[in-house]
Length: 276
Image (cartoon, rainbow, N blue to C red):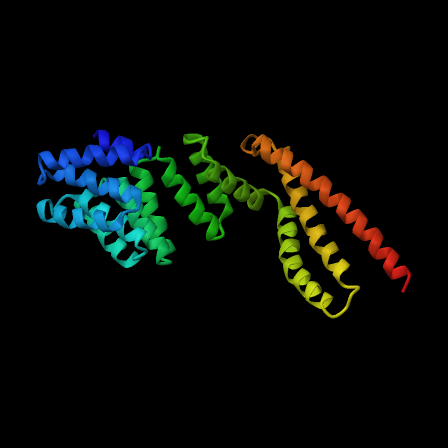
């Protein structure tokens, strides 16, 4: 429908005009009400979406897509128990809907039922293996569950299907780092260490004037390690193509700046300590 197309293009004013006209012609046509609810959900207008969905479920109580739209509504409301109930109902009404399974899995993720979510996503991928969004969700779930190997393969597939998705590319890079480079793990540990140690040193600087420079040195050193990690992966053939020219330029600029600052602070600290 034209109104849905406008909504997908974020042309909501045009979408509202078209759907309002369609509703005026037949206010009880379920498909039109369904599209209207979708458009309002796309805009984040939950009150109007809920009003039309309440009307719609009386007209088509066995339509799985109605329950799926309710799941979308409850997700935006952050009511994940209701989201799960509606998504589960949608999967029962249409067991071959990968989209219904996707929302059922997402609800389980929100509710920390990760193993159930994993099984549901695998079922969804069996139905629709070419859905990049499903691969991304599975990859992110695997990454956050501490399985970078599965995350790597799922996100790699997501990028193959949708190579222009920047957020997928960034998560893929993180999974690749965790999967194949032990050195990056050490760098991550250093970053975690510097947060705590850096905060401690900065707090000490409030009472002792000579500890502020060591705090800055620790923080700068950790940032240098972080930029070096990015630099290393810029030359990795598996990941370099996912790093934009802007990120590469920023990486080089940041690394040079951090190195210069680190050198200046190190020399200053050495001078101060030698004078004590």
